[in-house]
Length: 118
Image (cartoon, rainbow, N blue to C red; front, side):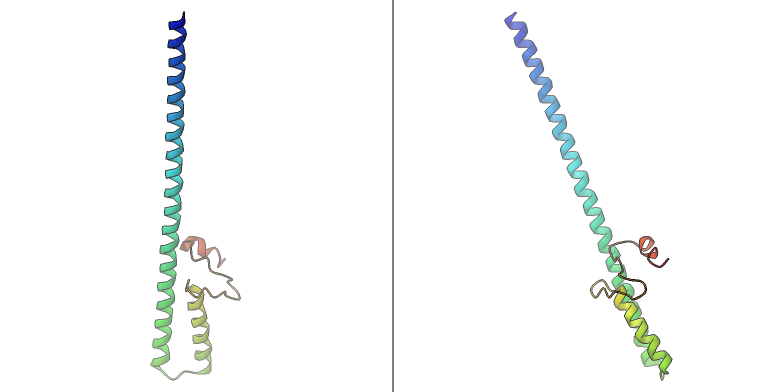
């Protein structure tokens, strides 16, 4: 009888140990999944900000070319001032808030950012 109860106890301990091992594996899997998702989100945000920065640089380059290309009327000067403000709005380093469009959410992709326009 003692031997039988000892076998049962060891089997119970083995099952408990197996359960703890499975739970630990699941916990580690979930932890890795969360870290992966955070890394994906950070990488997407980084690429979105880099794209916004590149767009701001393109706008500034275009505006500079316009400023050098001709004599500017008052209307042109106003448009250039507006375009420079849009470049500052696009630029995640400056992150100027637009009086109409509000604050640009640089970390979001184009699809999400377009919702700000509508």
